[in-house]
Image (tube, rainbow, N blue to C red):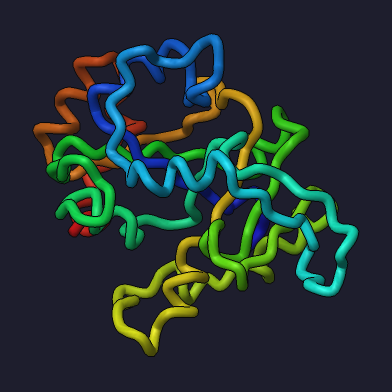
Length: 218
């Protein structure tokens, strides 16, 4: 797979879309952030990321001099859909304050190559960002992204159980972007049903940029 063909995905509540269309995907510390942002994630994980420093070792755990970054300073994207976090968002549990129905969860799709054209400060991981087995990579390894990411894990339909802990870790690899992601870098939107699609159209999104992908939900 060529770099230009690799897409990344970010989930959000449908009530955030109008602000995103005007201001882009904004970091919560951005001056352009949405003061009425509807959160759907795990509150404890968000707090953990705010303080979690990770080493950008480019796959070399022995590199004790590797620079560190703080996860909470970046906007995270996944490399696929139907992630373990989505299951918790839809069904509740952990520290998700309230479950969210599939029809209110929207995927925003971006091209990796387009993002890196506009953002000089980005990183990616080969697994769940807070897992100690995960390595982080900088822009010097971006052309190796296709080989570093475990695409079989990303696409795996079953990830539960003790036997699949590493598969589950690798399935949740991330692409981290510093700064707000402009609206024109969002190439498409995925939703659960026609009701959600119609609402996105009402927001002014071209129908050609919207896909109903019910199988990307639980």
